[in-house]
Image (cartoon, rainbow, N blue to C red; front, side, top):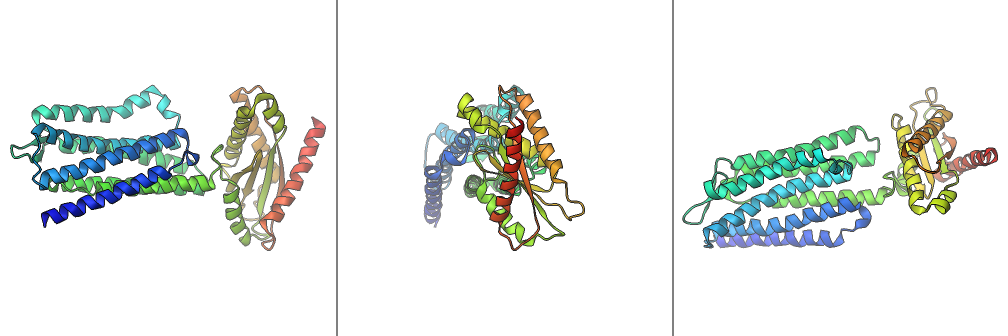
Length: 389
């Protein structure tokens, strides 16, 4: 019976290993930034090591596998440390995904390394005093009084992820991004609950953490795939596909009492910026434009997307025609935000934008009709801008 259990345990972990390896091979840098890509691959690498160590620990404990005491201690210590690395890897992935500027700050790197360094010191000290783990003469593992402290030191990583997610959730108007943050929170809470359960049943030496960790990795992978499908990777905005799906459905419920204002935006002299300063600067001009649009519409009930090249779309959803926001007010806000961001960036060129607007009131008309009308209004503005300049 015991060996049947061990074979089943090893088979399940082998399947986990194969599935994680499949995710690693299918994972592409096209759906993530370089930092996200590297941190996710590191998380998968740590998970592979953890699976091997977890199975080894179970066989040592139940399979009467006699190894030198120092080797048993080393395997168990590495297993515990790999769990810690999974938690810290999840944390770093979250930081690289939602606040990539933070790791550049020394104080941040110093504070986030304290729990990890403390755990390393405790595990090394345990070799002499057995306060975290100890090996009995018959080669069984015993958890010392400081073993729960390791778990408590891992908690700040999970807490920080949840705080990050809460802050980003409140400050983000994109329901796609909010959905991704909810997925992240669910995945992290799942791993956290499994870790707490493992702590309660530590004497049994059988862990459910490999299962929950794999589920978390799958959630994160789906999260990034979803981001790649519906998000413009350069600017972080919604893309054309999301705009067509979201607005195509939303426009079915519009009316004269519940209109939607659709804005088409186009960067002026964008080709000139590319030709004179290079495509890298052209990308920076698009990023500045995207930031200005997101900043201008952040306080409004709105949707924004980059359609292609230097074309952007904004949709505003007033609750009634009487309190509908004047189109010129949003246009002025976008242009003002763009001017401020260009001045702050100290670029050798100025970025300006032309915007055309149309009021959508008839649910029988397709989205393409309204986009065409907004485009016509845009080029009226654009011709006026060129004539003036």
